[in-house]
Image (cartoon, rainbow, N blue to C red):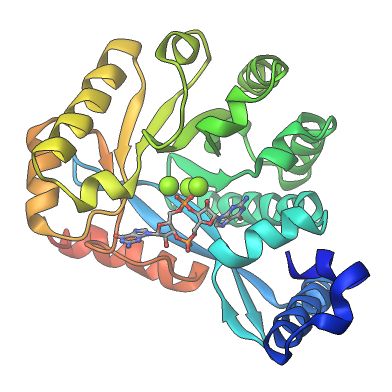
Amino acid sequence: HAKKQIGNSYCFNTPNQNNELERYYKIENELRNALRNNQFHIVYQPIINLTHNTISAAEALLRWESPILGHVPPSEFIPLLEEFDLITEIGNWVLQKVCCQMKSWLIQGIKLKRICVNVSPIQFKDTSFVKNLEKILDEARLDPAYLEIEITEGTILDMKESEKILRDLKSHKIGISIDDFGTGYSSLSYLKQLPIDTLKIDKSFIKELDLDGKVIVNTIISMGEHLNHRVIAEGIETKEQLDYLKQQNCHEGQGFYWSKPINADRFQKYIEDFKTMKLKI
Ligand code: C2E
Ligand code: MG
Ligand code: MG
Ligand code: MG
C-alpha cells in the first residue's frame, strides 16, 4: 500500500507514486472527518416478495459524498474505513440512523417486514457489537425482529466465536442474512448448524444466467428450501431474470429492475407508487 512506502522509499517515489500517496492521505483525512462533516447518507433499495409482488423489506446502503473527492463508491471507502479503524463507529451510526428510519416508517403505517443492514466483519467481531446493537434498538424503540443484519460467509468462517454471536443475535430476535452467498468458502455442514434466516444469492450468478449460473442458483434455492432459509436474488435487472427466478420459486428479489438504492423520501414515495400501480410485474 502507498502508505507503507513512506518509511524507506519516499525519496525514490516517482511523481506518479507521490500522487497516489497524496490521494491516499487526502482520502484518509477526508474520511476521518466525513461523519462530523455530514458527508455520509443512507440510501434504501426495495426487496420484493416474488410470490405476492409486495415490498417486504429494504436494504440500507451507505453513501459518501466528499466535496473534495466527489462521490466515492462503498467498494472503495468501506475497506478504507476498516483499515483506518473507523468502521465500527460509522457502522454504529448507520445502524442508529436506519433503526430510527424504520421506526418512523412503521409509525407512519408503512408495512415493511424487515430492514437489512450490512455489517463489516470487524464490526461483527467487536466484543461490544451485540450490546451496542441492543442499545441502538432500545433507543430507537424498534422491535429487534424488524432488523436483519447482512454478513458475508467470510465473517462467520474465520472465527470460532461467530456461532456464539449469531446465537446471541438470534436470542434477541435479530435476523441474520448471508450476503453474496456462493462467493465465499463456507462449508455446507457448518452453515447448516448456524441460526441463519436468509441467503442472498450473489449478483454475479444472476448476471450470468447461463447453464452454470442456473445450476448454482437452483442449488442455492433448494438448499434454502431444505434448511428453511429465505432466499433473495440480488442484482435482478431484466424481466427474463425475474421470470426465471419466479419459476424456480425464489422467495424474494432485489435489483435495478425495480429500483436503484434511493434516499428515504424517495423510497417512501416508491412504496406508495408500488402499492397503487403494482409496478412492473
Ligand atoms: P451488497 O451488500 O452486496 O449490496 C448490494 C450492492 O449491489 C449495492 O452496491 C447495490 O447498489 C448493488 N445493486 C443492487 N441492485 C443491483 C443491480 O440490479 N445491478 C447491479 N449491477 N448492482 C446492483 P453498493 O451500494 O455500491 O454497495 C457495495 C457493497 O458495499 C455492498 O454490497 C456492501 O458489501 C458494502 N456496503 C454498502 N453499505 C454498507 C454499510 O453500511 N456497511 C458495510 N459494512 N458495508 C456496506
Ligand atoms: Mg448487502
Ligand atoms: Mg456485501
Ligand atoms: Mg451482496
